[in-house]
Image 1: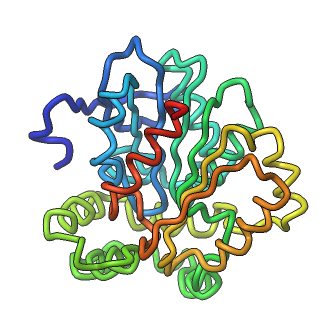
Image 2: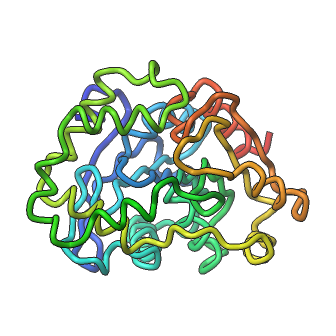
Length: 289
């Protein structure tokens, strides 16, 4: 499993004060400026596989945790760990344990909400911020239906439903061009889904996390202090977070210092689907180029 066989990448477990252990994949010298890569719902640090070496070569200490419930991290069997506030606490605790006074943050999908809340709560600890198809800028497709058909009673048999073909089909939906997904990618996402607690954790996240989109006025007020250090990257073929482009256009009209970049044909996970375009965008923004 990732990052086995990848030169310069190190995987280790980090124990937090609340007893939860996170798997963290890192690259680059610890003396360099830190950048946190935060994945979305159902993903893992594997999502950032193309980002580690380029950012480390640019002079960063790159850290990508598997958030609680994901990858090789612990999967607590309690809803309290999967609220947005709890996940912000988790990221802060990780920064404390790692001795990070502050860090730049790159966040995809669900993690975009975590990153914005983190920057709002402790602005002095967040440097530059890159949001990739963040859920808080759009409407999550079929969210209400998925909640309706996933009551707690299904926890008993939910793990049996996470078959490899299900994972493959779901992941193809998050790519604008499904042919870019290969068999190794499917295996890397399917393997951690087979650990006890994964499916239940995903259901808990679905019900406990904050998926709503604030109105433009409220979001403008939230982002105003962050606007000069914010890059938003949108895939124009995002099938999961809908109507984000007009919403971001409205935000940009009010906060023109926000940098917005669109990847034509890119899907929801454009950061891993189109690294040849998205990684240079992110690296240049972080470096101020």
